[in-house]
Image (cartoon, rainbow, N blue to C red; front, side, top):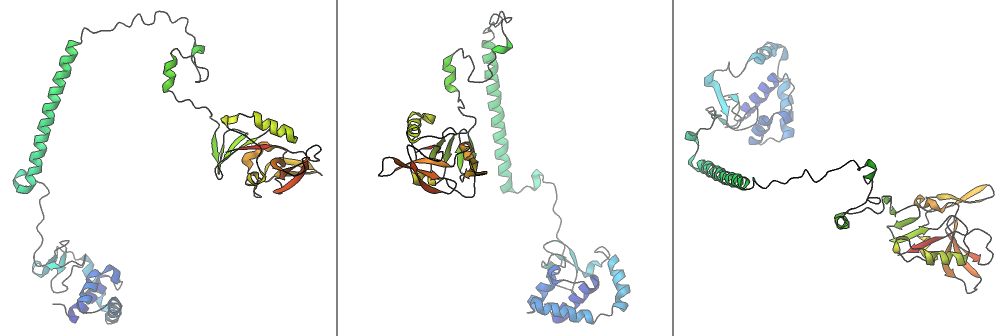
Amino acid sequence: METIQGLNELIKNRLLEKKGNVKLSDNTDIILYGRALGFNENQLLFKVLEIEETIDWAKEKENIIKSETFTTVTKSPNNIIYCSNCNAANEKGVANFCVDCGGELNPEPIKAQSQFVTPNNIPEKSKSPYIIIGIALLVILILVGLVYSRIKKDNGNNDSLVVDTTEVIKDTSSFKSNDIPTSLDTAKVANPKEVDSITVETNSYEKKIDNYIKYNENCIKDLNTNYYWYIAPDKDFDFESANNFSNNLTEKSLNWRVPTYSEIKTLYNSDFSAGQGYYANNEYYPAKIHNVFNAVGSGSWFWVSDRSYNSSIAYAINLHEGIKVRVDIQNHRFPVHLILISK
């Protein structure tokens, strides 16, 4: 039964063993012993300090040196008790818990189990898996033998089936290295039906940049709006030629048109610049749109489909400022470029 005296002796022995450097976190046995007596960890900490002050370290120095040379082998067998968990030797009467793992102590050591398992010491219940495995292996060997015999027999029957391939290629002198196709676009296919199983990559340029898919320098998809955009050639368009260009564009087999102001305004972002922009007064005014649209070049103003009640007035968007501007169809002062949209 745990006693205060036993706890004090355990703490003192541990202090001597550790030369005063005792941490409760490393001494589970002290914690368990203390809990059995109703001490919490804070109370145990003060008790360790209290007992440490009572030790005459000068007097115990010689005992500490001697204790460092002791092992479980030198201890008297009659004064040893063994841990039921790790089988470590502990001094009888000092504690009821193992100094190594804090497990409960037994009066007798745990007998070491044999490292080798023989058929005679296998429990009856554990023998059945070995029997099942043995039977399974036997069945597998029989099946493998049957399959092997069948294959050998079939090979014997087919010995006469020899294909003479010596006449397949009689003359290779006319074969030239230039005849080897370098791509699917230039390959000369002998049998067109063989192409059905080949997946042809039609556009190796396609790549994703931020929230855009760039099919080529001019055709781009905005993944935020799912709009397709096409950048027309870097030049000034009048309103009529802008509409004619959109009507004749067949890129990706889509239906292209001049965008509305609200549609093209979705491209505006003051954090970006595309192309070099319109040049005036010794300064460039680039379009404030993602640089994936760099093909706009010198474009800053772009046509929109919005129309005024006045037939001679149309509208454009100033993408450097992100604002809507009125444009005289017949005589516009600034160059207006073109970006088309498709959905």
